[in-house]
Image 1 (cartoon, rainbow over the protein chains, first blue to last red):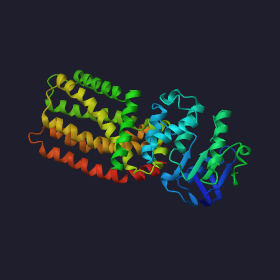
Image 2: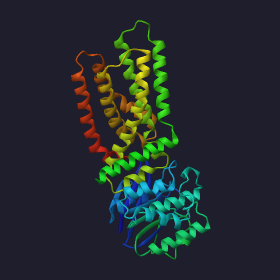
Image 3: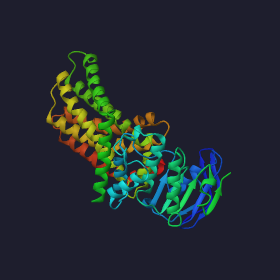
Image 4: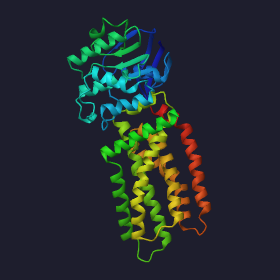
Length: 194
Length: 214
């Protein structure tokens, strides 16, 4: 469950978020939309616990290790390969049967063949697929996905559609996108930020 | 045990990154050797042993600063710190692992630097080696802590030296004292006290540094 009341955020003099109300029940799927610079990323960072609001309150019913956060940046090390990156996160997030889960995710996202290549050599789309593997690795209760479809090709986007379909109802999902029509069939609510 | 395994996994990652990228240790080695060469030619002939001992500590502090400035670069480039602070592990493990990795690079640079110093200036006493080892711990503890603070700011390259150098003054005092005094024990004890005090302080407060850094 995520509940925000009159949420606001300032960076110095600049106000990036103002009076946002949000309530997503456990298992709910909220799509956050809005133009560039409207504060979608800031809202998601606050929900993930990575930023503090300047105004208002936020309640998140998921501890730190139960949140899966997909950012604009993939949050993986470019000089490590996919296996090494996921192994590090798997250890830190206490993932049970880590190797099996990593192998399964890499297979599912089409990265198994390139698992020993450094991330620096990956295309943007492959890096985004790896970032999705990282987010799903510890089976988080709350998924906070900031424009997850960016850089994905058509098969990658379909793969993500399938994943979200599987997780819907079981996990709480907050997803920002510029293409809300894509996830409309899955979403339980829409949050528009002006 | 999970704390130890977290620190091990994070420190191993830092060592692996350096092994692949090789952009910190070679720079530190080149810098410290070049500094000694410059000091060798700039110090007037017949200068005292005391003056040369002072230069050793200047070189060590600035070489460490070079390594500390690069410590959080991989995390900054891909904003990986966000992923690490969301993990359910104790956040001080990030500081401890980064400090251990930086200590390893600094120690490796000094394995070359101290014989080069002995070659250019004068022999190194056991007390000096002990002081260098103790100083390294304090430098890496404080420097890694400040590096994490600085990495979140736009003026990070400027901020780290401005924050670090005043806090390194006691290390230089203790290090030079142990190198030149006839009874170095109290200077070594002073360095050990600095390590213990700042080590505990940094370990206990790192959580708030990364929380603020977001």
